[in-house]
Image (cartoon, rainbow, N blue to C red; front, side):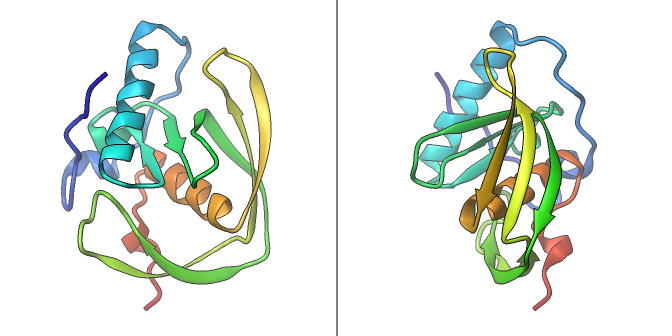
Length: 146
């Protein structure tokens, strides 16, 4: 597919709310593949559509166990707390300590239009929360505590 241009720093699209995906069509399939290609090329573990200039509710994540695509994700449960160093492909050369849940449960639609629930722990929980924040116009710098 294609590597898309990453939106960085003060690009206003990073602060906008995204829209729900109502149909998984060829454009969404292409977007998902492009997002994976872009994330892998940048050596990231997650990417949300606003980071490539698209205001749709879709994220891709791969913490090393294979790619996960979350369409219209909703975090329905969190527990625990852990503070770790976090970074973001949209803010190159910046990082900071961010408090995130140790566990996060997300409900989402997959690329076949089926609804699922996923329980993430540790890095996966962090990635889910980080990417869902992007869909709501929140960037990790908003959550840095030190």
